[in-house]
Structures are given as C-alpha cells and as structure tokens.
Length: 133
Image 1 (cartoon, helix red, strand yellow):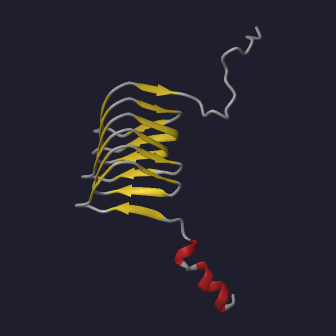
Image 2: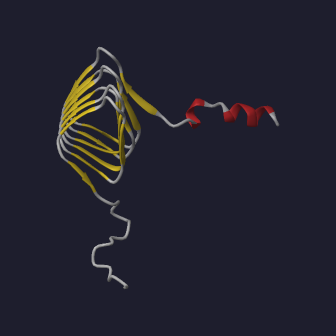
Image 3: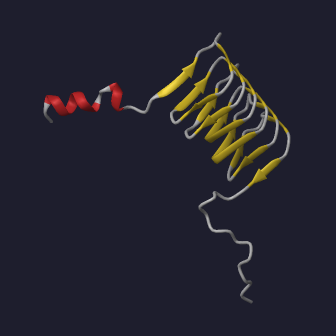
C-alpha cells in the first residue's frame, strides 16, 4: 500500500462528521442539519435532522424531534418522529409521543406517551391488499 493511500484512509475529513453539543452547553431554538448530532448538554427547541440524533446520558432535550434514528440515554420531553428507528436505552426518559417504523426499548427505560409504528413512506402498504384464500 502506498503512503498516499494509507494517509487518505486515516484522513479525519473522510470520517462521518458528528456535531457534539457538549455537556454544560445550552442551546435554545431550531437545530437543523444533515449531519449526525450527539447531545451531551441541553436543547430547548425543535430538532430537525436528516441524520441520526443521540441524546447521551445526562443530556436533556425539550421540544419536537425529527431525525432518521433517535437513540436516547438521556431525557426528552416532546414528540419524537424517526424515519428509521428509535432506541430507548436503560437510562432513557421520554415524555411524549413516538412515531417510528421500529422501536427498541431496553429494560429500565421510561416512556410516557403513545407509540405509533408506521412503515417507511417508501415501503408498500399492506392495507388494501386482497386476501387470497
């Protein structure tokens, strides 16, 4: 392997970028983007991502969430809408409705709200399919 190829493989610009909202950081307003976000501090407002959101243990989010994947170890007060899946880990606390095609809840996680599981918009619906018996 040439030196140029080895250097390019370890170039941090090639790695997927993750925005970190650090512990002791508070953000109010709209958080929007197309890159992954790891929340370690607190956000009060709407989160609109076309990427994953991770809410770390000890982090708090108050507001609506729209993302592809939402992984929660911290606390969310507000509705969650995920296009791929929602994961509630053992230390998670969610107060709000969850809309997602897939939900994974680890024992110990707390959820107060309704869960609506919908197929991805691109997936074919089984409703209206004739029953062949």
